[in-house]
Length: 155
Image (cartoon, rainbow, N blue to C red; front, side, top):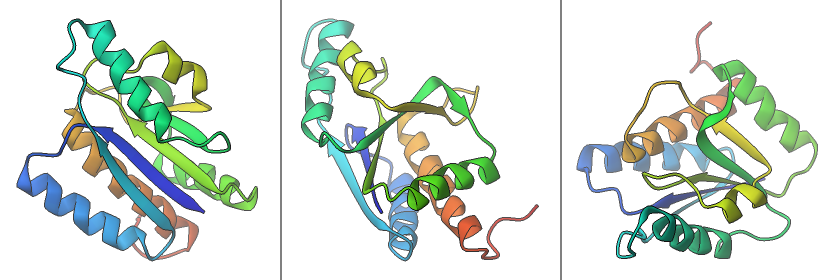
């Protein structure tokens, strides 16, 4: 199974980049993983224009057969164990590619919401979009270690 993570704008904090690089490297042991940074729509006037431009870029990166999962504050929340079961279920179903998307500061355009297959929320707390990248990659890595029965996650 291939996992693709799409994010808006570059990660500009070195400590976050280092952490993300570490988890992307670890994830390659479990799956084919791709990380894509898209340009922010900030040059456009207004929030809706920004979301629309970012949405257009996102949708160009997604194939018709991809499972699209938005990281969204209104999405379903999982425990780490439940998220690993969610991933495992898609592996068993022979899903070829899951695309996870972390949007910009204003969320997603209507067209991206319409295309989405699922929405996941990492927490009811608010995190910066750059920090969410690292947190999500760690949780994805944790999910694969749980699936494989490795000693990373403790109950």
